Picture (cartoon, rainbow, N blue to C red):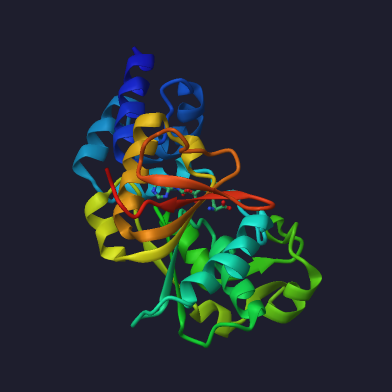
Length: 271
Ligand SMILES: C[S@@+](CC[C@H](N)C(=O)[O-])C[C@H]1O[C@@H](n2cnc3c(N)ncnc32)[C@H](O)[C@@H]1O
């Protein structure tokens, strides 16, 4: 009985945000038990509560997402973007800033690293690159906006000393990304499955969507990639995590191999 209710709940979660728990019902139970108890409900009643209380989804999402991230993660991709891709985009005529979207940004380490490396190139005037960073989890977005990370935090495990010294201010037992760098990034709440809301991001030149597709099945991955494709300008670039691939999915992207990494470019002519 309890298994069939948890299965129903896992289906609701899957439909809402693509996260798969149907084969990990005990994990789902562990993560939500405290909350369900707090509300004084049974799991069955909690399903009904979710249907009638949309705000509860924000809390549930906080309990179910994996938010692990750190500065300078998979740096070959970040460097490829800032040293090769952005300069190429910059050379094309445009009447707006270059726009980068960090989709599934968690606590902000990815978009802030991009903002730091863009400054490091010395090639971009202030305001000539906009970074939009989104996540489904409102709690991590709050932390991201503040840009403060405690001393010894996992966030700093890979960051080179020179970036640490240059772009952080020591503050209240931790380090805060300096205000100039923080101002280069705009955080927004977004469920990647929500094609309507993704449209509000507008056209972007580069997308980083790393280490989130690993939590989705192929059907959800295709839905998300389709949404990203819609937001990307023709010839725009998509960076996925190292363990994630859309090669052979026929999603309107071609693979680009560089010396140290690979990524995708949106095809100019769709068949
Ligand atoms: C492991 S973190 C990856 C962070 C960063 N991109 C990186 O590579 O370091 C995955 C993030 O995806 C977010 N996420 C999961 N499902 C999502 C969805 N349907 N829409 C938007 N974000 C989602 C989670 O909240 C989490 O912050």
